[in-house]
Length: 251
Image (tube, rainbow, N blue to C red; front, side, top):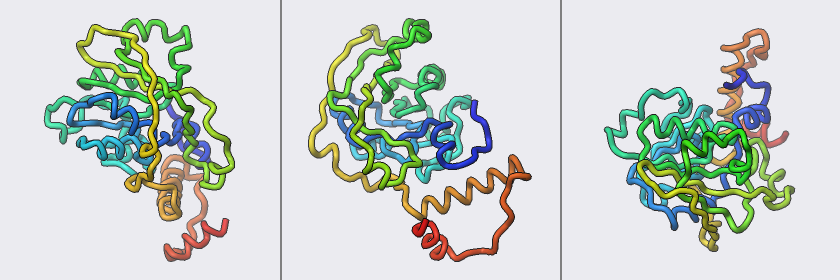
């Protein structure tokens, strides 16, 4: 599925299709869709969808295949799970996430296989446009689609705050797709609008701050040493964390 180890942060983001969900999107959909009390975000990234669900009063379990600095399980490959986490205790749950585009169909199939009562996924409008997914849509028809009336910006995780500021607004059409077990209605479409409060700061997410970058870099180097020792950089003398942050800030 993935080619390990990765060469740098940009490759990590692109191989894992890791782009950060615009915070207004999950807040807006939660005004239109009621989830089960228990929610699972299996591709949580830095926590935007998970935090929006927590703000709305849901109990959330967040996981990801890579440690982006957020979540209950930061090394979980959702597509290889045989059962839901034990902490669910057999309760019904909703999968609420922005999953990798190229594997969105697999995430739907796996979510139902693990027993999800409801699936709410944020995806590009292009998900509907490929003839290769005709069989998927026949087997897994969504019940409702909410097209974002205003374009949103979902930046790659490796983009710095400065790079994000330099980019223009979003040019890609995104929608929320809702699947429900046992529902007969299908392929209903509507618009979703944002309000001013949807854009407010989300303090609970893991920001791409210097301390997170230092931790990710250490984990990345450990992965290199484990999977491809010949490419591992020579060990350097220990550097105090404060000095390491200053070094990154100066780059």
